[in-house]
Length: 337
Picture (cartoon, rainbow, N blue to C red):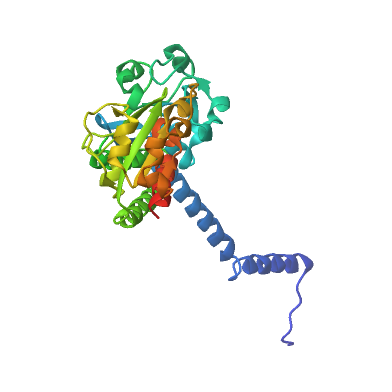
């Protein structure tokens, strides 16, 4: 009897089907299963991350810790220094309203991209309410409006302190708060580290450059700012290291009124000059014109070309912003370098 065996056509078809089924179970098949599992795992991880993303964040403010929306999409800012920092950290698109009042030129694009919410001192509450903000930020000149703003939307006060210690403490806290709110913590820390390094370098250069004085001109008058724990520009002396030519006599927003004779007798080695009229758009003589006289011209600072006519928009209008502080420290660094 022969060993071979004949099969009918239906039987052959059944065997072929079984063979194909077996092939589908060979080592090549699990690749599809593994890919599907990996995709599912990745999607689950993404879903988990999205689920874990915070909806709120607690930040340090001038009024203590406050919980606010995380990454708000509609923000009204009534403080140019804070607007500066928001813009620096890349969150400017979230700003929907600012006061179109005394806006520094380097932030002027916000006048066309936002609603006008009044002035720094007198907000337009109707306009702010109409902007439907998720968050309102006040500070400095607008800090007194906090209670009224809170009736419209969550509001925080990010005012800056005066005096070197208070200024740096609030500057760092406000920068970190903005970083936390907009998910830019790392960028905020990098920027703060760079500012600190610049301050230290400027102070080292200023150590042997003589005595200096900060002046501001306004409406043809001159005022001076010396060092003081509550002084507006105390940081020039006690942070950036310029030896003071005179102490602060009185604490005032616009310094101590002085005469040209006073400047001449004091004879500072360094002069830092702010032009308030130019910064706020008031007509009047420029700071250079006001100080253009024999008494000032005879000082050591003028004779040695050690006078810095600084960017007053940053020193006066947007004081405390990351862009403004970086520029301010660089200007002083150039003077003492």
